[in-house]
Amino acid sequence: MELTNTPICRLCGRGPLRARLSFSGAAGSLTGEFRLVSCDNCGTWQVNPHPGPKLAQSYFNRPELWAKTLDPEGRPVSLLERSQGRAQEYRIYAQAMTPFLPERGLLLDIGAGTGLMLSLLPDNRPKLAVEPNPVAAEAARERGLEVSREWAENLTFPKVPIGAIILNQTLDHLPRPDLFLSRALSWLSPGGLTLITGLINPLSLPARVYGPRHRLWSPWHQIYPPLAAVTGLLKAQGLEILEVWRPYFVTPFGGPWNLTRASLKILATLIRRPRPGAVSPPWPGNVYSLLARKNLLLQPLKVPSPQAAPLASQY
Image 1 (cartoon, rainbow, N blue to C red):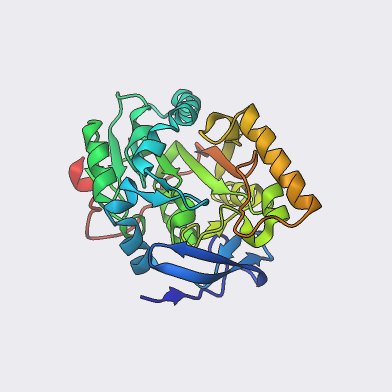
Image 2 (spheres, rainbow, N blue to C red; image 1 turned 60 degrees about the vertical axis):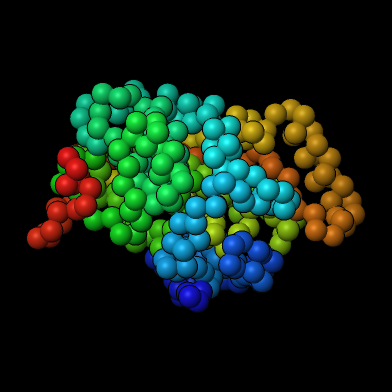
């Protein structure tokens, strides 16, 4: 399975693409140098050539991925434990979504992981967690959620009304987020919500200071869109932005003490060269999330298809 070269931007579908930098990576079966380019049209940075669907699916489907993986410093961590550690962040998103949820419609979490985010939303609406990894899917089922082990790029148009689509740390892992979003956003009912979390800002202070040693460069983080690129795309699709978060202080990586240490580390890097192997620290603005609502006057796209979606068979 080889990397795929895509000559256009994988968020806005345009370009041209400009070479930015290369970084060294070791993630699962992928090792070596990877190239980052940016789109002259929307500003999105992206890995190119990049892992295609088959390569990405083989990586994210590994059962051991959720039991043990390596953080940017090379330390083993459990994604199952780390997911639970983000409960405070997810509660903030759920509290913001709840007042705006349509009165009816499926709450659909694509790339749901353990289902924690979806479980925090009201139970008086149908929910579906889409999660292909067997370990994470089982954790979501243990929360009492209906689970479909499907891949985002293979989802087809559902017949049921969709009240909310959650992409919790998912969008930037997709090989072709542009193609996926153009379909998924059309599924939303008028007034439906989309929550997109975990997007990595390529213009953050650590990204500029550390360059190739930024902690969040990874071949599996396939796109790095500035906030303006995502909000512009959503508005063009008929959505209004309700809220934007930079959730550093409510994550396990934040807090005054961690921010002080990170500030000293960045200052030392500006004064002198960092030690070999050093990577940038967590920082406010490294990552952002946003909530958007579909215009009430827009209708869901009617896709002529003789076959109902796999999701629709459950409802």
